[in-house]
Length: 107
Image (cartoon, rainbow, N blue to C red; front, side, top):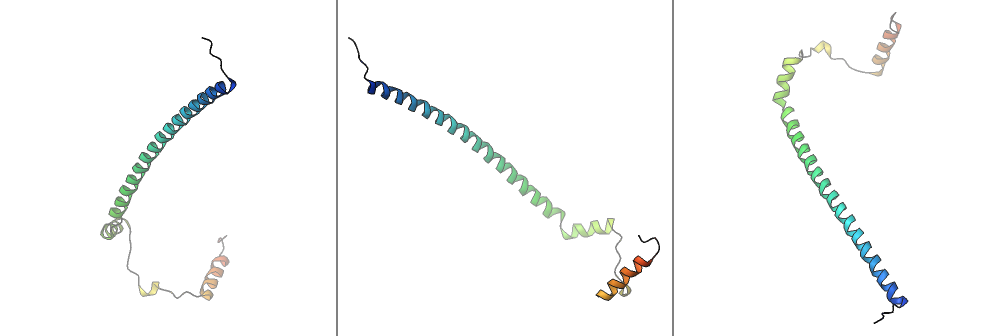
């Protein structure tokens, strides 16, 4: 019993072997990409949780009554007197700038 391989049969077997090898490679690549997507999704979830925690901390730290207590404790703020309020105009700004440049040691 002698089996003769025709060229078309041999090329068909080679084509099937190449197709199987390509499918295996594609399957392996898809599996790797799937793992990477899973890893990235986990990292995104962790970052979203961290951002949520930071928003909660920011809301806690910037409460107006908490800020007022800290300002009273660490800043020496006094109410403004009427003499501290000035009207700004370009003439006033220019004259004040000229006065500071005319003083010795200003440069």
